[in-house]
Image (cartoon, rainbow, N blue to C red; front, side, top):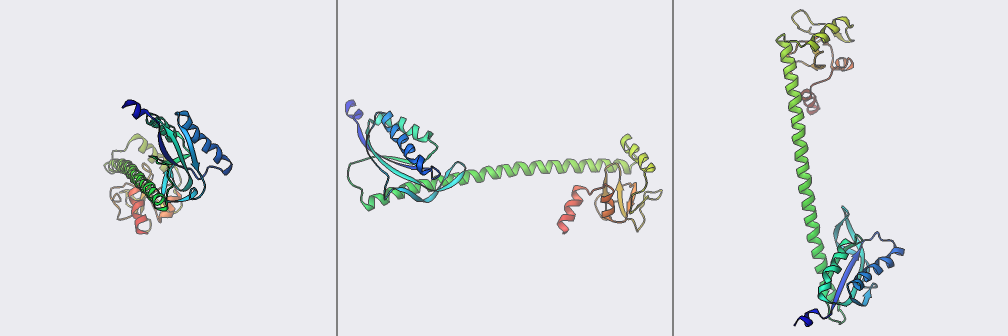
Length: 263
C-alpha cells in the first residue's frame, strides 16, 4: 500500500506569470518553473504556452505587489511526480514573485475539450475574484482603522489647544497675569501701536470703530460675538481682521473653523 502511494502520478500545473515580465525574460522564467519540477524529482511531459494559452486578459483583477493586475502569461505543465514532493514544489511557486497565480491538479493524459478548458478557467477566475474581494475588504478595514486613529489624535490636539486658550484668557480676565504675559504687556506699552489698531480704554473696552480684540499673551484675535470675546482683555483693538493678521495675530482654531464653515 505504501509503495502504491509513493508511486509517481501525473499532474497538471497551470501558472500565470506577471505581465511585467519582459518578452526576452519570459523563457528564463519558464525554465525556472520547469527547474522547480525537476528539482523535486518530477519528470516534465510537456508545457503548453501557445493558444489557447500565452498572454491573456484576466476575467478578474489579481492583487499583486499592492496593485491590481489584469492580465498575465498562462502556461500549462504536464509532469509526473511523487505526491510527497508536491508540497516542496508549491513552496517554490509561492516564493516566486513573478508567479501571481497557479493551480495544481491531478491529470489524465487526454486532450482537453472546450468545455474542460472553460471549466478550468472559471474555477481559476472564481478563486481570483474571491481573493481580490478579500484583499479589498482588508484594505478598507485598515484604512478605516487608520482614519479613526487620525481623527482621535486631531480631536485631542483641538481639545488641548482650546483648554490652553481658555486658561490663558480666563487668567487675564481675572487679573492673574503670568510673568510672561506681564512682560508681553509691558513690551506692548513700549511698542508702537500696529496699523489699524488703537489701545483699549482703562476698562479694557474697545471702541466701536475698532471692535476686534488682540491679546498679546496668546497672540489670538477675537471678533465680537465669538466665544471668548467678552472674557478677553486686549492690548490692541483692531478695525479689521486683516489689520489683526498683518500685526501677527491669528484666530483661535474654533473661530477659524467657524469662519471656514461660513464660507
